[in-house]
Image 1 (tube, rainbow, N blue to C red):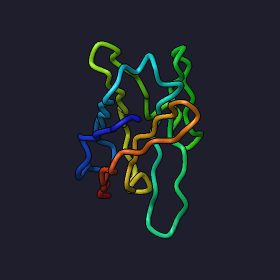
Image 2 (cartoon, one colour):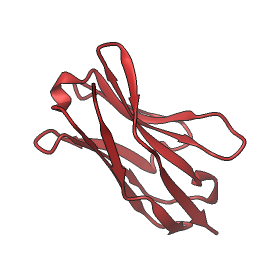
Image 3 (cartoon, one colour):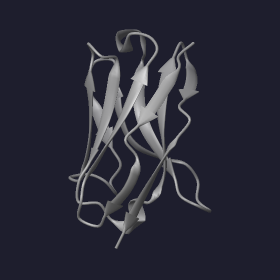
Length: 115
C-alpha cells in the first residue's frame, strides 16, 4: 500500500503562484507513476499532471506552460508548481499514485484562486 500526504494548498491570487507537495510512504522508485488530479465543484476529477517511474511527464493542455510536476526522490515527494494562476484553477487537488496496478489517493487539498 501507499499513503500519500498532500500539503501546500490555500488561497492564491490570479497571476500568482502556489506549490503543492505530496509525500509518499514508500520510495517513489517502487511506484509506477505519481500525479496530480483536480476536481472543481460540479465537475469530474481530471488529470493535471503526471510523472512516471522513468521521469517522463505529461501535463494537461489547460495547465501547460503554467504548471510543472517534479519530484525529489530522496524525499519521496512529488511537487506541483503552479504559476500564472487563474480563477478556473480553483479546485480540490488530489495526489495519485499507481502502485502494483492500483490507484492510491491523498486526502485532497483545496486551492482557491481569487480574481
